[in-house]
Image (cartoon, rainbow, N blue to C red; front, top):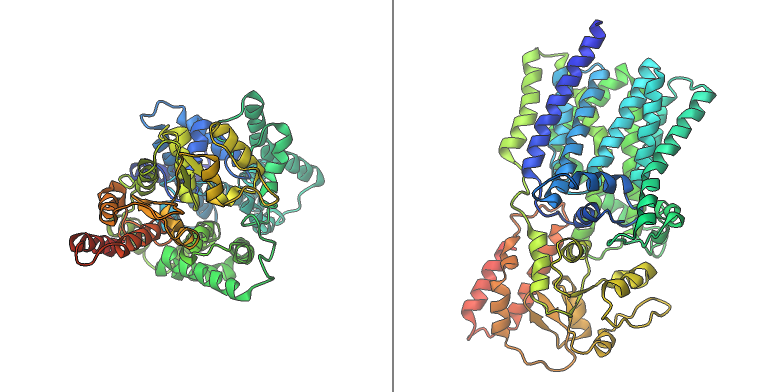
Length: 585
């Protein structure tokens, strides 16, 4: 065995040890239910081998489904744990990538640990999401592209082609890495035959997850099929996100420049969000080492510097440009939480540069100091800000409270992705829907959703769809379905009171009323305060860059409304309890 082969073997063993250590950390801290946003949808899709929102994420779903078939005590928690294994693998690949770039082991470990234990990466390693697999495929592509640039081995080109195809099939943002990959790939001339073969491999890898999904759809229609993909003919449209307006749409319904043309102010706001996220999740150490790494590569390897610079600039810049114009969510904190998870991809470049910065520093100090830096990067996050979701089920508790506060047959109107997907998981995976009807007005103009209502609730009388879809006049829904109440989740409180000012609280829900109701405000307050979910998630549990802030603000608004209906003299004790709750929210 040559010295180079022995060195590669030692690097592989070190990367394996890093993967095992991080996997154990993430597995122990994984969510036992699901996280905010799309997380419950991904758990649900894996358990049922369903079809989530476009582009369907077939590779993620298929891996999750296979993983959940193992004899786990809790398959849903195991699906969350899969994210941790993939995220740990991404950190191991970054370690190997830095080692191949001639970084010392201590420097490579520093860059990989900075990434893996940064708050944003760590958090999305604990919940079922598409980010961990996207990060792994992104770094896998970089590893093989850089290896091709250095060594010119055909197997590296073929491996890159396969990983690239899988990456494009997995997530639309993967295409934003093409300029960075091109810098490495075209460091050498690629013969036309090899280029054609690589393209064929990429196409095959891109198509494979969708072909497997097509076989699934041909065999049976899944219980959860959000885009209503029914067979082979729907796969291309699913991949191209036709139901969302195409691959460049960050949100359904808005044009490329949103509503009313290009808005420079919104672009500036999202740019500020991104810069703030860099400070929060990379920290001063990551930023300083990244700057040092960029300066070092300018002197030693400008090709790699260009690749990483394009990686960061394109994946961040294009997303910020498009999302700032298309995402028109009214709640700014929620919009900020939605877009923050997309910063994971560009931040990989910063952590790669941090590894090079640690190498430049290691070249000027004694080896002991380089290892001390690597140890600090590992130990300080674990000791000062350990992150675990093992006992955090705030969103699941919230969804269960919505069910508990309604009666069988009642119609519950939902607004945010968090509650929409959480209640779907309750209904379809856990079987805890209790014959409640969950309605999502934001999808009332979407024909597949209307068809799914008829399938899921055969006893529900759905109003006829007009040019703009189903009506949101809830008096029409009540008239068609006598005996069923219309209830709204608390995030819709202002809308409910503006349209139906006689509405009243019903625990954690709002009951739509058009006539003066008979209710007892003090009893309403006691019911709300006695809900376990009311106290299960506080501002000390919620991270401001996650969508859980939406649940928190909804509970806060509901508590304020319930308190405003109390008698200050007769209900002093209840008002005091509500003030304690509001302080916690």
